[in-house]
Amino acid sequence: MNYPSVDISEQRSPINLVGDMGQAVQISIHAPSQYICANCEHILPDWKQQPLFWVVIVLQRSQHYLVKSTTEIESEKQRLREKFMRFGCDVAFDLRDRGYLADLIDPRTGYPLLSRPGAMPHNDTAVVKALLGYPVIKNKCCMLVHPVWGTAVYPSVLISIAPPALIEFVTKEVAGKHGWEERIEV
Image 1 (cartoon, rainbow, N blue to C red):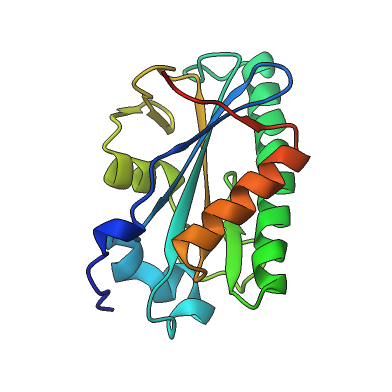
Image 2 (cartoon, helix red, strand yellow; image 1 turned 90 degrees about the vertical axis):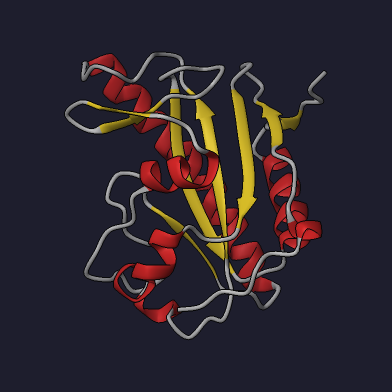
């Protein structure tokens, strides 16, 4: 699948948010990685006819470093997954209501929530590494290393054919409804 080059005016700065409990959230919009382009029909078979789509990376700061597998850490991962799933569904359905195909990837399974799953799961960590350049630690599973949060980061992904400006608008609007307010970085 060949994607047109991305106009630099379409590139956006990350959206930095903070939740009501002080939890940091970072959201960025990107053209798909080579991995997604090469494997689109295996990951999202219903999307193979789409000429262009965008990847929305949602990074939530965890209360714990996600290096080990303990009951407390697994509970934190589940809490962050649930927050993303509620947020992601609201964003995806808002974009769909506006006439744009949108979906979210379940961080636990790697399969789309609203589209027919393909034969291959999506790998959020690999996509974040490819698009943001964050290093990955390979343990029992692969973990991202955020430049500020270290391994206290939970990655997740949304995908949509909507224009980046609309994705950003809807993301900010929905984030506010979920208690995530924009934080201005100084």
